[in-house]
Length: 118
Length: 118
DNA sequence: CAAACATATGATCATCTGTTCATATGTAAT
DNA sequence: ATTACATATGAACAGATGATCATATGTTTG
Image 1: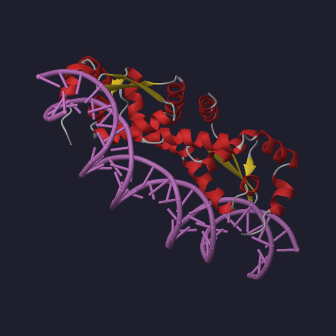
Image 2 (image 1 turned 45 degrees about the vertical axis):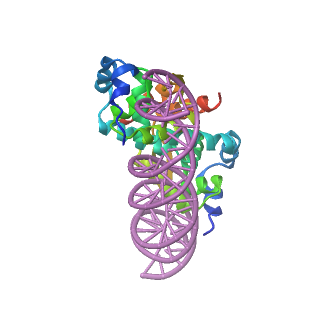
């Protein structure tokens, strides 16, 4: 790797700004968690599941049928969504209903939609 | 794969809701684009770059130094961010400054942070 | 308790992703 | 023009990811 010190010290930005940025950065753990959260949104299947749950809570087999995918695939993804605390579930007899856990989900997806619609 | 029709028709949800959900779903292309957008946020390096740019526009080598990563790695990721229209850049002599393109970036990351802080 | 059903889970495999390394491009200065 | 510097890019490789398949778990009903 080559040296890059010259660039930064001479003309790119003021050292105070570099210092300030370092102080303002969230800690590594928060950044990691944040990236993990967005990874969960970064998959078409999971996004579609979330959209389905916007309308109403729903059981696994309904989601699978709506999205035309296998029960197993949906179940695996619901697990990911649950771990990220984006959905919750409740049992009623044999069937398990999933629902949106949080209103951040709507906001985040809404902002994302606004961005791509530009 | 086993049959799942019985479940849904009998007790899971009302058919009207299933119909309604299908109508409310954005089209495939929008869902794909949305997932692609969130994928961009779903990486620690890119999140860190965005946080750095919150404070001030900055050149590639500064970002590389701040994040303690190679110039090449940063350049590759800036390319991804640019394609997603999350950052823009301008040339000034030899150096190229990158900056946040959009205020959705702050909102989306802000909401993400709120979510994980719970 | 045995059978049927709804869901969960572990292993596997093909595909995607991010970093590195080497090198190319573009700009400025001598 | 030649050299130095800032950035970009392509190939390659290791690690992560998502669907599938087979099977396990947990619940209800006869």
